[in-house]
Amino acid sequence: MYFGILYLITGLLLYPFMVILVRGEKGIKRGILLKQIWSRVMCTLVFIKVDVTFEENLPKDKPFIFCPNHFSYLDIVLMYIVLPHNIAFLGKAEILKWPIISLFFKRGVDIPVYRGSKEDAAKCLVPAGEELLKGRSLVIFPEGKISDHVPQLAKFKRGAFSLAMDTGVPIVPITFYNNWRLFSDHTDIFGPAKPGVSKVKVHKPIDPKDFKDFVALQQKTFNVIDNELKKYEN
Image 1 (cartoon, helix red, strand yellow):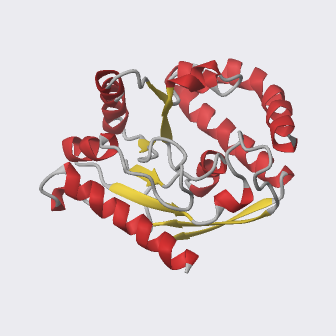
Image 2: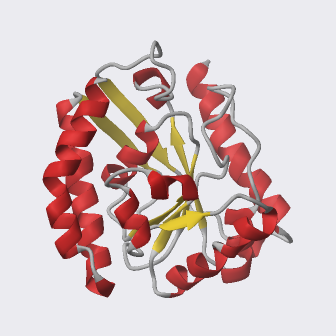
Image 3: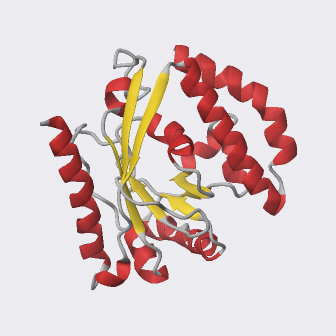
């Protein structure tokens, strides 16, 4: 409840700036800046710090497809603290019904994914590819939703990896180790929600040119995150 109240209060305070500033091409960068501010304010008020390790320096002027595991709604908030890049989220189209955050999807900062059918879901890869060509990076949660068996990874969907094979843009796995212990699925009213330190690792980029098909690339990315989680849990 505390998190939800803060989300609404801080979101409403920032909303006039979002409406005015998030317009056109320049509005995308302004929108990302507003999200970075919003994320830092939220984390400060809920007393969550971020401890992030980069295996390799990632240039900001080069596009990447970032693929984090997804065990908590905190994952979304923290991406704007973890990554200083110009990023676009691929998020479920249901977000278009959410207050405040939907504005970013409607104005081109992020990209909605319609999941009524495989054909509908595949259509989002067209604008996603266009953003990569512009030099923007993408954030795609390859599990597609919060895992049903946290802290075990759910099966990865193919979208991010097909896109990487088609465009030649590297995949960057990201491991969120313990977000699920700090903030669970918001629908679980009795789940964990507490201050703490979120531990994150941004792994080395994986070049799609080293793989014969998207399946091999998909499995490699899965293994990187899965092995890291198992080491941490053990």
